[in-house]
Image 1 (cartoon, rainbow, N blue to C red):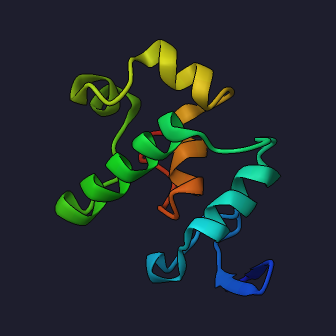
Image 2 (tube, one colour):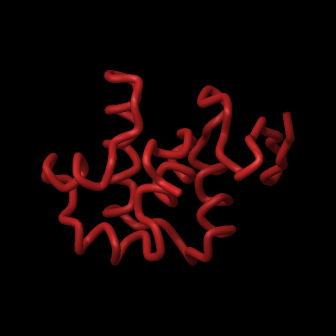
Length: 105
């Protein structure tokens, strides 16, 4: 299993860079992953989506899809694409320390 180092933290990742052990996730790791994805900073709206995704994962064992995020009221589809351009579910899941959402290529 590949390892990736973010600052002083080394984490286990899969071939696409998604954490394989959620317990290794920290906000600092999230900010470093976001920087890799091209984000200058994560704002309150980003954290709202990330925290919702983590809550859903902990409760249901599944990474929520864009459709589920939209229906939850956490953010509209348009807002998700503005917050996480170029693949909101994939990018948000990666930053949140979750596996790649099912159905994403």
